[in-house]
Length: 366
Image 1 (tube, rainbow, N blue to C red):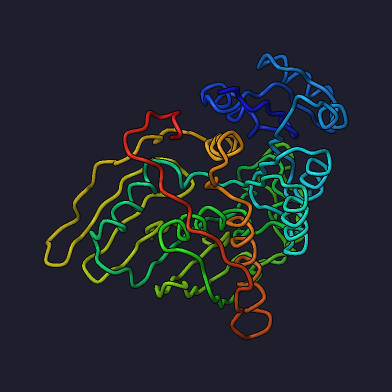
Image 2 (image 1 turned 60 degrees about the vertical axis):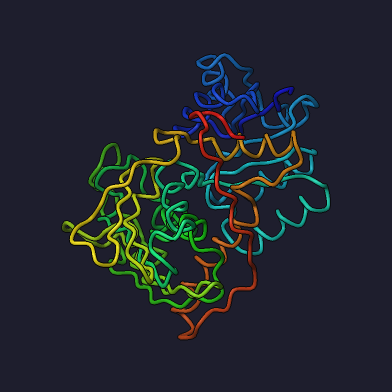
Protein backbone atom coordinates (compact mmCIF):
# COMPACT_ATOMS: atom_id res chain seq x y z
CA UNK A 1 0.00 0.00 0.00
CA UNK A 2 1.52 3.33 -1.04
CA UNK A 3 2.26 5.69 1.84
CA UNK A 4 0.33 8.94 2.16
CA UNK A 5 2.70 11.84 1.46
CA UNK A 6 2.57 14.42 4.24
CA UNK A 7 3.73 18.01 4.64
CA UNK A 8 4.22 19.64 8.04
CA UNK A 9 3.32 23.31 8.52
CA UNK A 10 4.88 24.81 11.64
CA UNK A 11 8.41 23.75 12.57
CA UNK A 12 8.60 24.66 16.26
CA UNK A 13 9.78 22.37 19.03
CA UNK A 14 6.88 19.93 18.85
CA UNK A 15 7.56 19.18 15.18
CA UNK A 16 10.60 17.08 16.09
CA UNK A 17 8.61 14.14 17.45
CA UNK A 18 6.31 14.22 14.40
CA UNK A 19 9.32 14.01 12.09
CA UNK A 20 10.83 11.17 14.14
CA UNK A 21 7.68 9.09 14.44
CA UNK A 22 6.57 9.92 10.90
CA UNK A 23 9.36 7.61 9.73
CA UNK A 24 8.16 4.75 11.90
CA UNK A 25 4.56 4.33 10.73
CA UNK A 26 4.02 2.56 7.42
CA UNK A 27 0.89 4.56 6.51
CA UNK A 28 2.53 7.94 5.91
CA UNK A 29 5.75 9.62 4.80
CA UNK A 30 6.72 13.18 5.72
CA UNK A 31 8.22 14.67 2.56
CA UNK A 32 8.24 18.43 3.22
CA UNK A 33 7.87 21.11 5.85
CA UNK A 34 7.03 24.80 5.84
CA UNK A 35 6.93 27.73 8.23
CA UNK A 36 6.30 31.48 8.13
CA UNK A 37 10.05 31.62 8.78
CA UNK A 38 11.24 29.78 5.67
CA UNK A 39 14.82 29.61 6.91
CA UNK A 40 13.68 27.82 10.04
CA UNK A 41 11.71 25.39 7.88
CA UNK A 42 14.77 24.71 5.73
CA UNK A 43 16.93 24.12 8.80
CA UNK A 44 14.39 21.66 10.17
CA UNK A 45 14.10 20.02 6.76
CA UNK A 46 17.85 19.49 6.57
CA UNK A 47 17.83 17.96 10.04
CA UNK A 48 15.27 15.33 9.04
CA UNK A 49 16.09 14.83 5.37
CA UNK A 50 12.97 16.38 3.80
CA UNK A 51 12.28 19.43 1.63
CA UNK A 52 11.91 22.84 3.28
CA UNK A 53 9.76 25.50 1.62
CA UNK A 54 7.19 28.24 2.08
CA UNK A 55 3.62 27.49 3.14
CA UNK A 56 2.39 28.48 -0.32
CA UNK A 57 4.81 26.09 -2.02
CA UNK A 58 3.84 23.21 0.24
CA UNK A 59 0.11 23.72 -0.34
CA UNK A 60 0.67 23.93 -4.11
CA UNK A 61 2.51 20.60 -4.25
CA UNK A 62 0.14 18.08 -5.88
CA UNK A 63 2.04 15.10 -4.42
CA UNK A 64 1.28 16.12 -0.83
CA UNK A 65 -2.05 14.58 0.16
CA UNK A 66 -2.16 15.48 3.85
CA UNK A 67 -0.98 18.39 6.01
CA UNK A 68 0.01 18.15 9.67
CA UNK A 69 -0.70 21.61 11.13
CA UNK A 70 1.63 22.41 14.05
CA UNK A 71 1.17 26.19 14.10
CA UNK A 72 0.19 28.17 17.22
CA UNK A 73 -3.40 27.55 18.39
CA UNK A 74 -4.74 30.93 17.24
CA UNK A 75 -3.63 30.03 13.68
CA UNK A 76 -4.97 26.46 13.73
CA UNK A 77 -8.26 27.18 11.97
CA UNK A 78 -6.88 29.50 9.30
CA UNK A 79 -4.11 27.07 8.31
CA UNK A 80 -6.57 24.13 8.31
CA UNK A 81 -8.89 26.08 6.01
CA UNK A 82 -6.00 26.90 3.66
CA UNK A 83 -4.98 23.25 3.51
CA UNK A 84 -8.53 22.09 2.85
CA UNK A 85 -9.01 24.71 0.13
CA UNK A 86 -5.84 23.34 -1.46
CA UNK A 87 -7.42 19.86 -1.50
CA UNK A 88 -5.37 18.39 1.36
CA UNK A 89 -6.57 16.30 4.26
CA UNK A 90 -5.45 17.97 7.50
CA UNK A 91 -4.41 16.83 10.97
CA UNK A 92 -3.93 19.62 13.53
CA UNK A 93 -2.37 19.93 16.96
CA UNK A 94 -4.81 20.61 19.78
CA UNK A 95 -7.11 22.41 20.05
CA UNK A 96 -8.96 22.07 16.75
CA UNK A 97 -9.54 25.85 16.71
CA UNK A 98 -9.72 28.80 19.09
CA UNK A 99 -13.50 29.20 18.79
CA UNK A 100 -16.48 26.97 18.11
CA UNK A 101 -17.33 29.03 15.04
CA UNK A 102 -13.88 28.47 13.55
CA UNK A 103 -13.98 24.78 14.37
CA UNK A 104 -17.36 24.42 12.67
CA UNK A 105 -16.05 26.14 9.54
CA UNK A 106 -13.18 23.64 9.36
CA UNK A 107 -15.52 20.65 9.63
CA UNK A 108 -18.02 22.07 7.15
CA UNK A 109 -15.37 22.83 4.53
CA UNK A 110 -13.86 19.36 4.92
CA UNK A 111 -17.28 17.79 4.44
CA UNK A 112 -17.93 19.84 1.30
CA UNK A 113 -14.54 18.88 -0.11
CA UNK A 114 -14.78 15.21 0.85
CA UNK A 115 -11.61 15.49 2.95
CA UNK A 116 -10.68 14.23 6.41
CA UNK A 117 -9.86 16.34 9.46
CA UNK A 118 -8.07 14.92 12.47
CA UNK A 119 -6.73 16.50 15.63
CA UNK A 120 -4.47 15.85 18.56
CA UNK A 121 -4.33 14.79 21.28
CA UNK A 122 -3.69 11.20 20.27
CA UNK A 123 -2.35 10.10 23.66
CA UNK A 124 -5.59 8.18 24.25
CA UNK A 125 -4.24 5.70 21.66
CA UNK A 126 -1.34 4.86 23.98
CA UNK A 127 -1.12 1.70 26.03
CA UNK A 128 -2.20 3.40 29.26
CA UNK A 129 -5.59 4.74 28.16
CA UNK A 130 -6.23 1.82 25.77
CA UNK A 131 -5.76 -0.58 28.69
CA UNK A 132 -8.21 1.47 30.77
CA UNK A 133 -10.74 1.41 27.92
CA UNK A 134 -10.49 -2.38 27.66
CA UNK A 135 -10.92 -2.81 31.42
CA UNK A 136 -14.08 -0.69 31.36
CA UNK A 137 -15.50 -2.48 28.31
CA UNK A 138 -14.69 -5.88 29.79
CA UNK A 139 -16.64 -5.01 32.95
CA UNK A 140 -13.82 -4.92 35.48
CA UNK A 141 -15.48 -2.07 37.42
CA UNK A 142 -19.08 -2.86 36.47
CA UNK A 143 -21.32 -0.10 35.11
CA UNK A 144 -19.49 3.27 34.98
CA UNK A 145 -21.07 5.75 37.39
CA UNK A 146 -18.67 8.67 37.47
CA UNK A 147 -15.15 9.97 36.93
CA UNK A 148 -12.83 12.61 38.32
CA UNK A 149 -9.93 14.29 36.53
CA UNK A 150 -7.40 16.77 37.87
CA UNK A 151 -4.70 18.89 36.22
CA UNK A 152 -3.10 21.19 38.76
CA UNK A 153 0.02 23.29 38.36
CA UNK A 154 1.46 26.66 39.30
CA UNK A 155 1.53 27.92 35.72
CA UNK A 156 4.17 28.29 33.05
CA UNK A 157 5.90 31.56 33.90
CA UNK A 158 8.50 29.90 36.12
CA UNK A 159 9.91 27.59 33.44
CA UNK A 160 8.63 28.30 29.92
CA UNK A 161 10.81 30.60 27.76
CA UNK A 162 7.75 32.37 26.29
CA UNK A 163 4.78 31.80 28.62
CA UNK A 164 2.65 34.78 27.53
CA UNK A 165 0.31 32.77 25.32
CA UNK A 166 -0.86 30.58 28.18
CA UNK A 167 -2.56 33.60 29.76
CA UNK A 168 -4.04 35.10 26.59
CA UNK A 169 -7.21 34.30 24.62
CA UNK A 170 -7.05 30.69 23.47
CA UNK A 171 -4.83 29.77 26.42
CA UNK A 172 -5.45 29.00 30.07
CA UNK A 173 -5.36 25.60 31.77
CA UNK A 174 -8.59 24.38 30.18
CA UNK A 175 -7.49 24.99 26.60
CA UNK A 176 -3.87 24.02 27.23
CA UNK A 177 -4.41 20.74 29.06
CA UNK A 178 -8.16 20.15 28.97
CA UNK A 179 -8.03 18.44 25.55
CA UNK A 180 -5.92 15.57 26.97
CA UNK A 181 -8.31 14.92 29.83
CA UNK A 182 -11.57 15.41 27.95
CA UNK A 183 -10.44 13.27 25.00
CA UNK A 184 -9.43 10.45 27.36
CA UNK A 185 -12.74 10.67 29.25
CA UNK A 186 -14.77 10.62 26.03
CA UNK A 187 -12.73 7.66 24.73
CA UNK A 188 -13.59 5.78 27.93
CA UNK A 189 -17.15 6.95 28.64
CA UNK A 190 -18.53 8.34 25.38
CA UNK A 191 -19.77 11.81 24.40
CA UNK A 192 -20.94 14.55 26.78
CA UNK A 193 -24.52 15.86 26.87
CA UNK A 194 -24.25 18.78 29.32
CA UNK A 195 -21.63 20.70 31.29
CA UNK A 196 -21.52 23.31 33.99
CA UNK A 197 -18.63 25.01 35.73
CA UNK A 198 -17.08 27.80 37.73
CA UNK A 199 -13.99 29.69 36.61
CA UNK A 200 -11.87 32.55 37.92
CA UNK A 201 -8.78 34.61 37.19
CA UNK A 202 -6.91 34.35 40.48
CA UNK A 203 -4.03 36.68 39.60
CA UNK A 204 -4.73 39.45 37.04
CA UNK A 205 -1.01 39.75 36.32
CA UNK A 206 1.85 37.25 36.25
CA UNK A 207 5.58 37.93 36.47
CA UNK A 208 7.86 35.80 34.30
CA UNK A 209 10.68 34.25 36.32
CA UNK A 210 12.16 32.13 33.53
CA UNK A 211 14.75 33.16 30.96
CA UNK A 212 15.04 35.00 28.62
CA UNK A 213 12.07 37.18 29.70
CA UNK A 214 12.75 37.30 33.43
CA UNK A 215 10.86 40.11 35.12
CA UNK A 216 8.39 40.85 32.33
CA UNK A 217 4.72 41.20 33.30
CA UNK A 218 1.91 39.26 31.63
CA UNK A 219 -1.72 40.41 31.74
CA UNK A 220 -4.02 37.45 32.36
CA UNK A 221 -6.99 37.37 29.98
CA UNK A 222 -8.43 33.90 30.60
CA UNK A 223 -9.61 31.90 33.63
CA UNK A 224 -6.74 30.13 35.35
CA UNK A 225 -8.76 27.95 37.75
CA UNK A 226 -11.67 26.07 36.18
CA UNK A 227 -13.87 23.50 37.94
CA UNK A 228 -16.34 21.69 35.71
CA UNK A 229 -19.04 19.04 35.87
CA UNK A 230 -19.96 16.84 32.89
CA UNK A 231 -23.05 14.74 32.27
CA UNK A 232 -22.11 11.99 29.83
CA UNK A 233 -24.83 10.88 27.42
CA UNK A 234 -24.51 7.26 28.65
CA UNK A 235 -25.16 8.28 32.26
CA UNK A 236 -21.88 8.80 34.15
CA UNK A 237 -21.16 12.16 35.82
CA UNK A 238 -17.64 13.55 35.56
CA UNK A 239 -15.68 16.20 37.45
CA UNK A 240 -12.77 18.07 35.86
CA UNK A 241 -10.42 20.56 37.53
CA UNK A 242 -7.78 22.43 35.53
CA UNK A 243 -5.65 25.03 37.27
CA UNK A 244 -2.55 27.17 36.86
CA UNK A 245 -3.07 28.49 40.42
CA UNK A 246 -1.88 25.66 42.67
CA UNK A 247 1.41 27.04 43.94
CA UNK A 248 2.05 24.12 46.29
CA UNK A 249 2.08 20.37 45.78
CA UNK A 250 -0.96 18.24 44.97
CA UNK A 251 -1.67 14.55 45.59
CA UNK A 252 -4.78 14.34 43.41
CA UNK A 253 -4.97 11.47 40.91
CA UNK A 254 -4.95 12.34 37.21
CA UNK A 255 -8.12 10.37 36.43
CA UNK A 256 -10.26 7.91 38.37
CA UNK A 257 -13.31 6.12 36.97
CA UNK A 258 -15.91 4.79 39.42
CA UNK A 259 -18.17 1.86 38.62
CA UNK A 260 -20.76 -0.33 40.29
CA UNK A 261 -18.08 -2.97 40.84
CA UNK A 262 -14.90 -1.01 41.57
CA UNK A 263 -12.62 1.91 40.78
CA UNK A 264 -10.11 2.29 37.95
CA UNK A 265 -7.02 4.48 38.43
CA UNK A 266 -6.09 5.89 35.00
CA UNK A 267 -2.64 7.32 34.16
CA UNK A 268 -1.76 10.86 33.05
CA UNK A 269 -3.52 11.42 29.70
CA UNK A 270 -0.66 13.69 28.60
CA UNK A 271 1.45 10.54 28.17
CA UNK A 272 1.12 7.25 26.33
CA UNK A 273 1.97 4.80 29.09
CA UNK A 274 1.61 4.96 32.85
CA UNK A 275 0.28 2.62 35.49
CA UNK A 276 -3.31 1.37 35.35
CA UNK A 277 -4.69 0.01 38.63
CA UNK A 278 -8.03 -1.37 39.77
CA UNK A 279 -9.65 -1.65 43.20
CA UNK A 280 -12.54 -4.06 42.80
CA UNK A 281 -15.45 -4.24 45.22
CA UNK A 282 -14.42 -6.37 48.19
CA UNK A 283 -10.69 -5.97 47.58
CA UNK A 284 -8.31 -4.61 50.21
CA UNK A 285 -5.80 -2.88 47.94
CA UNK A 286 -5.07 -1.64 44.46
CA UNK A 287 -4.04 -4.20 41.84
CA UNK A 288 -1.73 -2.98 39.07
CA UNK A 289 -2.78 -4.22 35.65
CA UNK A 290 -0.42 -5.16 32.82
CA UNK A 291 -0.81 -3.11 29.66
CA UNK A 292 -3.07 -4.79 27.14
CA UNK A 293 -1.72 -2.56 24.34
CA UNK A 294 1.62 -1.21 23.21
CA UNK A 295 2.52 2.40 22.35
CA UNK A 296 3.54 3.22 25.91
CA UNK A 297 6.48 5.40 24.85
CA UNK A 298 6.14 8.78 23.10
CA UNK A 299 4.07 7.86 20.04
CA UNK A 300 2.88 11.38 19.15
CA UNK A 301 1.78 11.33 15.56
CA UNK A 302 -0.09 8.03 15.89
CA UNK A 303 -3.34 9.95 15.38
CA UNK A 304 -2.04 11.38 12.11
CA UNK A 305 -0.78 7.96 11.03
CA UNK A 306 -4.16 6.44 11.88
CA UNK A 307 -5.84 9.11 9.74
CA UNK A 308 -3.45 8.34 6.89
CA UNK A 309 -4.52 4.70 7.14
CA UNK A 310 -8.15 5.83 7.02
CA UNK A 311 -7.39 7.73 3.79
CA UNK A 312 -5.85 4.57 2.36
CA UNK A 313 -8.64 2.18 3.38
CA UNK A 314 -11.81 4.21 3.81
CA UNK A 315 -12.31 3.20 7.45
CA UNK A 316 -12.97 5.79 10.19
CA UNK A 317 -10.04 7.45 11.93
CA UNK A 318 -9.92 7.65 15.70
CA UNK A 319 -8.56 11.14 16.50
CA UNK A 320 -11.30 12.70 14.37
CA UNK A 321 -12.31 16.28 13.77
CA UNK A 322 -15.75 15.53 15.23
CA UNK A 323 -14.16 14.30 18.47
CA UNK A 324 -11.91 17.38 18.61
CA UNK A 325 -14.85 19.71 17.99
CA UNK A 326 -16.86 18.02 20.77
CA UNK A 327 -13.93 18.62 23.13
CA UNK A 328 -13.63 22.24 21.95
CA UNK A 329 -17.34 22.87 22.58
CA UNK A 330 -17.14 21.36 26.07
CA UNK A 331 -14.17 23.55 27.01
CA UNK A 332 -16.03 26.69 25.94
CA UNK A 333 -19.11 25.31 27.68
CA UNK A 334 -17.37 25.31 31.08
CA UNK A 335 -16.44 28.98 30.62
CA UNK A 336 -19.93 29.87 29.34
CA UNK A 337 -21.61 28.14 32.26
CA UNK A 338 -19.49 30.08 34.74
CA UNK A 339 -20.19 33.41 33.05
CA UNK A 340 -23.93 32.80 32.65
CA UNK A 341 -24.66 30.91 35.85
CA UNK A 342 -26.39 28.11 33.96
CA UNK A 343 -25.83 24.64 32.54
CA UNK A 344 -24.49 24.52 28.99
CA UNK A 345 -26.25 21.92 26.85
CA UNK A 346 -23.92 20.44 24.24
CA UNK A 347 -24.98 20.91 20.62
CA UNK A 348 -22.48 18.45 19.15
CA UNK A 349 -21.81 14.80 19.70
CA UNK A 350 -19.26 12.34 18.34
CA UNK A 351 -18.62 8.65 17.95
CA UNK A 352 -16.66 7.02 20.74
CA UNK A 353 -13.30 6.21 19.09
CA UNK A 354 -12.85 2.55 18.26
CA UNK A 355 -10.25 0.87 20.50
CA UNK A 356 -7.05 -0.30 18.88
CA UNK A 357 -6.85 -4.04 18.20
CA UNK A 358 -4.89 -6.21 20.60
CA UNK A 359 -1.49 -7.59 19.67
CA UNK A 360 -0.18 -4.68 17.61
CA UNK A 361 3.48 -3.72 17.56
CA UNK A 362 4.24 -0.17 18.72
CA UNK A 363 4.01 1.36 15.26
CA UNK A 364 1.29 -0.84 13.79
CA UNK A 365 -2.26 0.46 13.35
CA UNK A 366 -4.39 -2.47 12.10
